[in-house]
Length: 163
Image (cartoon, rainbow, N blue to C red; front, top):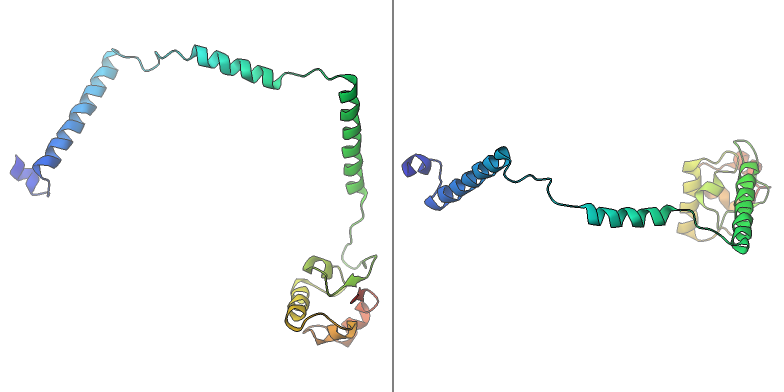
């Protein structure tokens, strides 16, 4: 028999190990089929009861005193006012101009994109130019950036600053 399995490259030690594993599998199937040991016989009731007690106490409503209720109400009012403020805040849409001048020496890409005619690519070019050459000394230096000519600069000059 060893010669037959030897053709597959198995040694005696491999055959013994495989035989033991198969024997263990068969024994497990016999035990399961006979009902000798039911897998669900472990009693979890004590640990389950403790877990359930902890769960209930963690999620039951805690009684607050008057001071805590007042703080909670003020906090709720404040959070509601912040939500209302956020909903009522006006955001710039395409074509709208920013309320304050944008400092091109400090502005992020998103800020630069608020300017008319400045998209993502041009904003990145402005930042790249600023990083390579240092800060813009005058707003006219912006025309050195590829994609910003005299016409586009004329639209931007009242909306930008270098200070």
